[in-house]
Image (tube, rainbow, N blue to C red; front, side, top):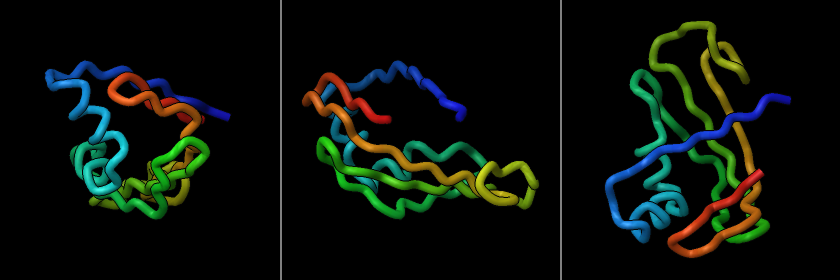
Length: 89
């Protein structure tokens, strides 16, 4: 099983970043790399809640991990510390 750890420094107040991590509409906008679109299938932002998101290449590339051009992943929110941490697995 592969895993990815992402560290990103954002020049914004912690409260805004925390809210953007827990808002499915914001996630659908900020987390999409260029050349891809996103779909949020499920997003229950509470400890123990789950989320499922798909990223799809705009142009067929054959490089998707879930299907020919889509990467779908799901996680469970393990820890939510307001303005400090969003932990998932």
